[in-house]
View (cartoon, rainbow, N blue to C red):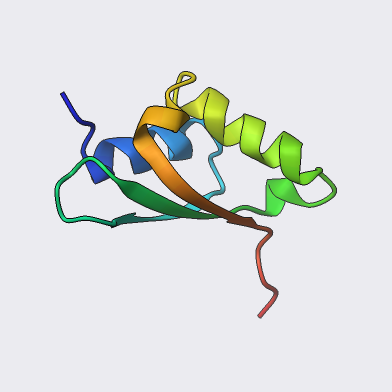
Length: 77
Protein backbone atom coordinates (compact mmCIF):
# COMPACT_ATOMS: atom_id res chain seq x y z
CA UNK A 1 0.00 0.00 0.00
CA UNK A 2 1.52 3.36 -1.02
CA UNK A 3 2.25 5.96 1.60
CA UNK A 4 0.30 9.21 1.53
CA UNK A 5 2.16 12.49 1.09
CA UNK A 6 1.01 13.66 4.53
CA UNK A 7 2.42 10.48 6.11
CA UNK A 8 5.78 11.01 4.43
CA UNK A 9 5.93 14.63 5.60
CA UNK A 10 4.91 13.67 9.16
CA UNK A 11 7.62 10.99 9.37
CA UNK A 12 10.30 13.43 8.22
CA UNK A 13 9.09 16.17 10.60
CA UNK A 14 9.01 13.71 13.52
CA UNK A 15 12.68 12.84 12.96
CA UNK A 16 13.84 16.34 11.92
CA UNK A 17 11.67 18.68 14.05
CA UNK A 18 12.80 21.95 12.44
CA UNK A 19 12.22 20.66 8.91
CA UNK A 20 9.93 22.33 6.45
CA UNK A 21 8.71 19.60 4.11
CA UNK A 22 7.03 19.90 0.71
CA UNK A 23 5.85 16.70 -0.92
CA UNK A 24 4.86 16.58 -4.59
CA UNK A 25 3.07 13.65 -6.22
CA UNK A 26 5.04 13.34 -9.45
CA UNK A 27 2.70 11.10 -11.41
CA UNK A 28 -0.63 11.77 -9.70
CA UNK A 29 -0.84 8.14 -8.66
CA UNK A 30 0.16 8.37 -4.98
CA UNK A 31 3.22 6.23 -5.63
CA UNK A 32 5.90 8.56 -7.03
CA UNK A 33 6.81 11.46 -4.76
CA UNK A 34 9.41 14.18 -4.69
CA UNK A 35 10.33 15.89 -1.45
CA UNK A 36 11.89 19.23 -0.68
CA UNK A 37 13.24 19.32 2.86
CA UNK A 38 14.60 22.54 4.35
CA UNK A 39 16.26 22.26 7.75
CA UNK A 40 18.70 24.42 9.66
CA UNK A 41 19.98 21.19 11.21
CA UNK A 42 21.43 20.26 7.80
CA UNK A 43 23.95 23.09 8.08
CA UNK A 44 27.46 21.66 8.18
CA UNK A 45 26.30 18.16 7.23
CA UNK A 46 27.49 16.51 4.06
CA UNK A 47 24.89 15.82 1.38
CA UNK A 48 25.19 12.10 2.14
CA UNK A 49 24.54 12.70 5.86
CA UNK A 50 21.47 14.80 4.98
CA UNK A 51 20.15 12.02 2.73
CA UNK A 52 20.79 9.44 5.45
CA UNK A 53 18.81 11.54 7.95
CA UNK A 54 15.78 11.58 5.63
CA UNK A 55 16.25 7.89 4.79
CA UNK A 56 16.30 7.03 8.51
CA UNK A 57 13.20 9.18 9.09
CA UNK A 58 11.34 7.04 6.57
CA UNK A 59 12.48 3.80 8.18
CA UNK A 60 14.75 2.92 5.27
CA UNK A 61 11.92 3.05 2.72
CA UNK A 62 13.04 6.11 0.77
CA UNK A 63 13.86 4.19 -2.40
CA UNK A 64 10.31 2.90 -2.68
CA UNK A 65 8.70 6.19 -1.68
CA UNK A 66 10.73 9.17 -2.88
CA UNK A 67 11.92 9.40 -6.44
CA UNK A 68 13.44 12.86 -6.10
CA UNK A 69 14.85 14.61 -3.05
CA UNK A 70 16.00 18.20 -2.62
CA UNK A 71 17.74 19.05 0.66
CA UNK A 72 18.76 22.52 1.79
CA UNK A 73 19.49 24.49 4.93
CA UNK A 74 17.13 27.23 5.97
CA UNK A 75 17.42 30.43 3.96
CA UNK A 76 17.89 33.49 6.21
CA UNK A 77 15.24 36.23 6.01
